[in-house]
Image 1: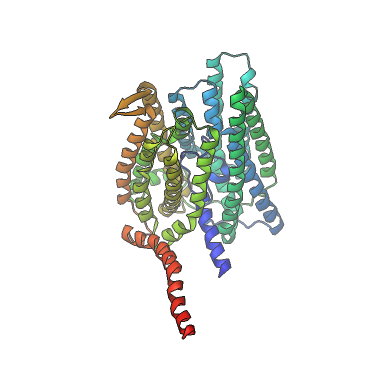
Image 2: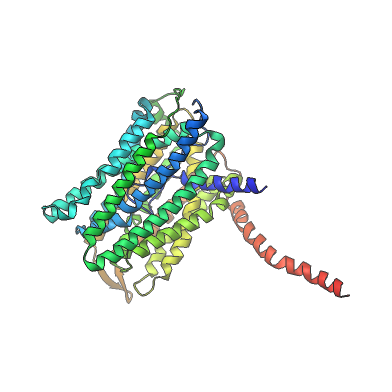
Length: 503
């Protein structure tokens, strides 16, 4: 029974690891590493099993490679990337553009599907990951290059753009490769264990990078700290490439079905999938209005430092992993659609929490970490289950690419426009006797947009739904009722027994 419960927990963690990530406050971006940005669908077929010894060696190497990818993400993206942008004098509009790049680049997953299907998935992964992670090498010398500040900023943006696009291609190829490599019977347990290991590595690396920046910046060594962190990121990228080379690529048979344009047209014209495409476009657009500005707001308006940014991200990750089992059981028992509806409406209030924070009042950020971690964990699991359920096996890569592209377009356009709005709006103003900033406007608009987009979740088709939102509420409240009963019932039982012994 204990082994069965452990397997259920690890399977739930694996589903979080396989979810398509939407950048949130405190999360690494742009360019999530292939280690956690996606995992293969749970029902792969048509692939020859790898021999036991190469398979065991490949699975161990994949865990180590994921840890290196997390170190790269901690030292080259997220708060460090925001630090580079502020160090080079980037405006709020440019920060919005940098935040839009990860999901805007998801459009590249559509042509990547053709490229991956025609070439070795291992080769495609290694080439794309090599370009994505080693493109950061010029940033090591950027603070000392004899260039004008504007030229340095343009070089920085170009490097980040190239790295992000190739990161998307590498992630798509990696997902397809792991789908062939990891046996279906081991998939849940393996990716669950891998997620826990990678979460620890990413947390430690993020906190270390944040402490380094906070300690070096007041001494006037911000450029030195950023350069050193980029060098560590590139070393981690080289290590990850060596570990990718050690992994086995099984011989895969061709998938039977209609490839190419016919599969893509089928995905766009499928009446069951079309409402989910509309939801992806609208929801990610609403999220994109504010998602790229949480770290920027913490650093520039709340003056918290990089350590608080990293600590907030760690808090989100801890709550997200802790709630994995609860959400996984809810999706399995009731379906993805009710979970997506509940989490979408709940997440609509998250940006509004930030309206109550100030340099003297930071406790709302802790509430946001708990609420965001809990609701985004359920949203990620439900969105993944629904996307796989709506995508038939023939042409599944093109269905998933269409879903990712719709979300990327919505998020990217909204983030760019939000950056322009933040640049042209008053940086500070007083309304209703309270002081506000231009970023508060984005938080308010994002909250309204999320609330409107959440209504589209009601129209989604879920082939595996076995209940609705009321059943979900009863399912979520059952563990709390059980916990309360466990805390009081034993005392009520022990009191009569004690009385009988006294008599």
